[in-house]
Length: 324
Image 1 (cartoon, rainbow, N blue to C red):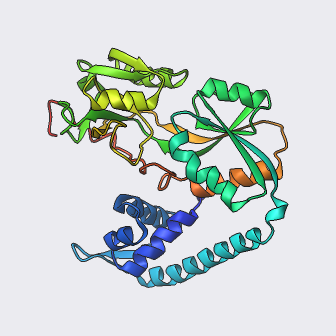
Image 2: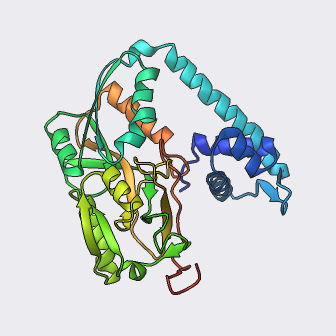
Image 3: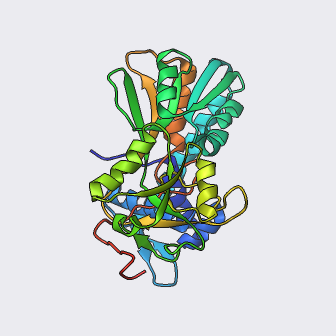
């Protein structure tokens, strides 16, 4: 069974065809070149055809079948625009309250575009938002205090349903003067002797520590915080490294110091970003429409407020003792 081709991926493909290069498309639509390349590779894999001829240092050109598919892709994108136009003419059909729960570490990045953008698109919707850790938000969902929760697949339960949207692999976060800052990748063994700053919130804490257990490594935890921005500030100020999954677009702590992301080599479990609803509960039109927005706006090529995730080949392992 084929997996879906998203609207975003089609947009990246069309932009590349029109620009004649991935770099040109990147500059035109303000999306990173690796994200555009990944989208094109995904579409080629799904359709089983080659869309572009790659010319070394001279951009790309559409194949014969690529030219036909780019025409169809433009038609599909135009039709999707028409769908939004029709929906905008019937805004009064999507009205009422929407109570969204979001993990505190995700909220500053996800909610401006995903949640409040929904409110701008549907002015008849009354939005309220709650932040907290995974356990707090699931408790609020069960108590009917929120309708839907944006979170990770940190814990399963018979009464909730998790809808995955994108994988977020772990990476190492260091300050710009840290000994690991100039490496392209590190292993868990490389981290063992370095001081660590741990994001200490329920479920997330267990996930981070499980990465060390699986590698047979004991982390040297020197500081903890339940606030991601405090973690980033401590890392930027040289207290230690940390491991994270979210990738804020800004590589600065709130006090203006630079942060470096280093790939974590090896085969590590990614966190899956998604939304949670209660099982066997009929979703209101407002909630189901918001859930559809989440599915359309979030993918592994594009996550609102974040840099796109980077997936590491587990067979390419570099250590502190090896080549940077």
